Length: 169
Image 1 (cartoon, helix red, strand yellow):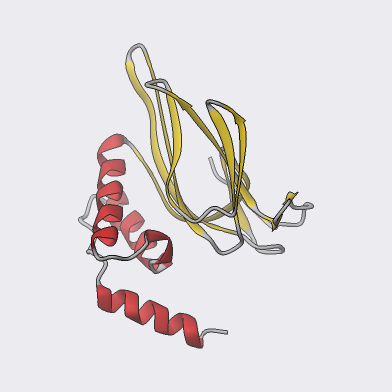
Image 2: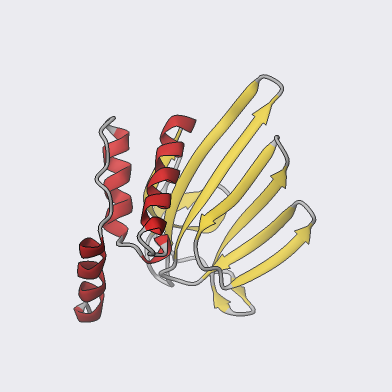
């Protein structure tokens, strides 16, 4: 369950400043938490199976969590988040400290796979998914949540997003 709270607690300050940290774990065919896209600002290797990535405020990244036991998959989830800046509200997400603005939150392998395909489609345009319009990820979340097919991201949509970025305060 997610909760939204004001970022009033003292944020974690790493060597590069205030960052959103994501704990990644990789135990082959048991627990596989990874970043599908995003531009990390810092990496801390804990051991050969675990590391922590730090993302600067405003960064967009996709965090995939998959886990299984002897009977099959028990968790299959993807979250696309925007790292919150100091004083901005954020939602808590497991393994993300302190949390982030949720742009997309999908669970269940069939839907997760469709999100991964949507990410691939953005990359096929030659666009880094971390630079795509946040509204596109919200759109995919909303459409998949109600069982509809999301619209593809387009170059013209991306151009409009970049222009909007230039004039926004």
